Amino acid sequence: MKKLLSFIMSLILLIGVAGCTSTNEIVFADAQWDSIQFHNAVAGFIAVEAFDYDKWSELSATTPATHLGLINGEIDVHMEEWADNIPSYADDLEAGEFVELGINFDDNFQGLYVPRYVIEGDAERGIEPMAPNLKTVEDLKDYAHIFPDEDDSSKGRIYGAIPGWEVDEILRRKVEYMKLDEQFVYFNPGSEFGLASAFTNAYENGEAIVGYYWEPTWLMGLYDFVLLEDEPFTTVEDFQAGKTEMPPMDIRIAVSNDFYERDPEFSEFLSNYYSTSALISEALAYTQEHNVDFTETAKWYLRENDSMIDEWLDSERAQMVRDALAR
Amino acid sequence: MRWITEFPYSFNFDNKIIDDFVRSFRDTFAVIFDGIGDGLNAMLRGVQSFLNFIPWWVYIIAIFLIFWKQQKKLVSGILYAVLLSLIGFFGLWDLMVITMSIVITSVIISLILGFPIGILVSKSDRLDKIIRPVLDMMQTMPIFVYLIPAVIFFGLGRVPAVIATTIYAIVPLIRLTNHGIRMVDEEVVEAAKAFGSTGMQTLFKVQIPQALPTIMTGVNQTLMMAMSMVVTTSMIGVGGLGIEVLRGVQRIEIGRGLIAGSAVVILAIILDRITQGLMKKEEGVTNE
Image (cartoon, helix red, strand yellow):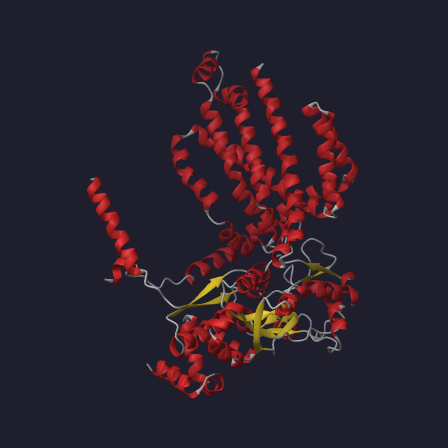
């Protein structure tokens, strides 16, 4: 019995050792939302097909944890650094803790959203318009009663941003500055999951909801929401005081110091890399509709946007990517 | 040879089936869920307005007196009063009251449900066999998994938080009530029956009093487990001390997280000591 057991154990060990060949791997940050996973798949596909990497992988964690991972060198590439949501970002960049390579996309939106049927109604679902004249954040004052707060029914509820995000404080100031707090409760949804489930539930039940959200996200791609208009952006100070609309953020691509030294060629490709909100939304919708993984989506995306490959890579590498896509 | 290192087959299960089932379940029984939600909301409001009604200094004096009397030392009374007022000094008093209202409501519901279930289970071996794996599952299932249906059924806020906390925290109460009653000396029960007690009389006058120290341990553990859910439930819009911890985590602010975390610890220690004190009292009564 003992002999048999030790034989089995050694067999398992042997197989384990044989399976452990050294691989040349590139690690992407996965801050656990769709668009970053999509970008990882695109860049990962190119890393494997056109550069000397055997495989690409993702390290999943929260936004601040992936940022720390990049600084520590556990993560090689971060495709979407939402700089404005990471308080220490500017300091870390200045201190040379990591290398910023460029902007991935900068045409995103954020602010207070309502479902389109709240304003226009939805004949198909039998929903009457609840707030036909709702266009701006200011207009919300007339409609507090259609967004009732569960705890305090005399007031409306505005779903706030994720606690800890910079925009949470700004939005709170905005509600005070615009005197919306007289009619509304600024409700803390607690987490991204909480906010998303509140939006999903309200939308599927055809109820009115107003709250913070941002694009591109799968939720905004899947459901029809309208961004409420606000005072045009003037200065950063006014924006921080909550007086103006929220300007689009620059979503940046960054690599660890270590990786930057190790692979200047891939870093060069990343600094050429770019996308737009519209393209990302299209790709996310493709994923959702065809029920495929992001690797499949990445291939589809590269075929659809063939000219980008030449902008990102030299002709030799571009050909390698095209060959891989043709396979 | 790949089948040696890799699992050879997986079928494409469509998770949507489960999603749709849960959603339609919610729609079918919407009335019931709304009723439960409203009831819990009313209860929460009651608990919270009671806790808010008491001024802060009454809490501190009460804690001072309780621990002075319980531990028979002036120093420990002062120590716990100072610890509690530290929460206030860090500006976390209001958040603490919110947290306390969630924890206390969850514990009350756990008592209302868990105590009778524990008694029932102690009376039937078959029920015991059925409920044991259920309890194991309730405790080991990652908490986020039932946060999702809780939010789908009851929306964001305090109601799903109380439900999730109760599911998690009720387990030790059921287990230890069951255990305590089963551990009561066979001969004592027989003696009671010999004197002509009915089953109910034996249960309420002999078995439960005998089992009380064990049951109180269950209450204490239930309370502690409810406290451990504070941060998790903050993720579904409860607020309270947990939200400060989440903010600290989200912004990598060690200080903010540590202070809010310490406030949770202080609250937990105070609640733990109070219930343990009650436990000792019970033991003292039964040993006499």
